[in-house]
Length: 362
Image (cartoon, rainbow, N blue to C red; front, top):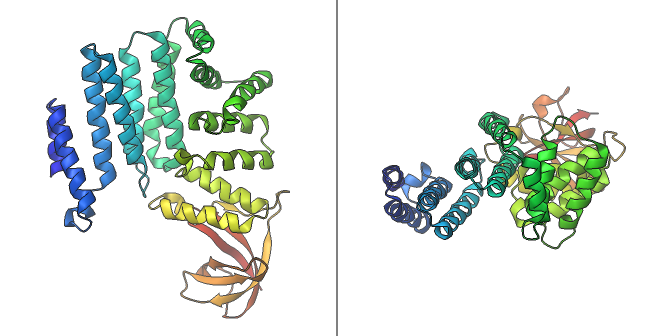
């Protein structure tokens, strides 16, 4: 009730009152773990609404000419959107809200450099959403991305503006990322330009605390230049995982789990997939098999073991002696009826739930 009351006050342009009510709702959820309404009210939804309210406060301050207050409110909005993204189940709302906040600001501003930076910030949020959300949640982001690209292309003297940003010592890093992202929006790219982009991004990649957006961009350019360099990609993704902002990136965890398997780092692979299983509740990729484990040459890896548990037709376990591990399998999906203690060969399939022994043979 408090959440919806806060939304109502915000819609009535009573932003301070809305914040007061929403913080009260947040306090109740945090203090009372077993309140009945917690089943229908999720804390990340309130975080998202607080982000929306603070973005509206930022807009109002901007319209009043109070730029310092506006920046503070927008920064607070971003903090709340970040908290809302830290949901156990994938949630499109904070990504959509944050991307639209940047887009609306850009559309209303006249200063060209800030306008371009805000559009690119929106594109970076969309890229983040593409890494986390199910495919059915993404069409709204594709529409927004198309709108942003159209708006960017309509900016006069765009090349000169970006060059000016790159020459400004205070905007050089963001200016470089803007330049590279705008280049990647083109229908085709030259190898020479991509190498130049990779060299620029390498400087940020090499720092102790690289920018997460720069790291995602570095990964993208590296893949374009070296599509078969799995070892190099694995090192980049491990560096990305070391960043706190990337630890809840579902596609990153999935790729790390696959690549760890490829390089025979099986315990590490299981750890990545265990974390992925924990934070991917409700994601469609928890169902089915999306890839099969291979070695560095692309050959399917096969193991031998024995059936050690027959819990049900839907889930049982095989032992993998050489790894000192067990892997679940689905008895009903096999071409024969496995028996307890029976020796079998099998490969490993991957989903957001983790490892699954598949294609069992006697």
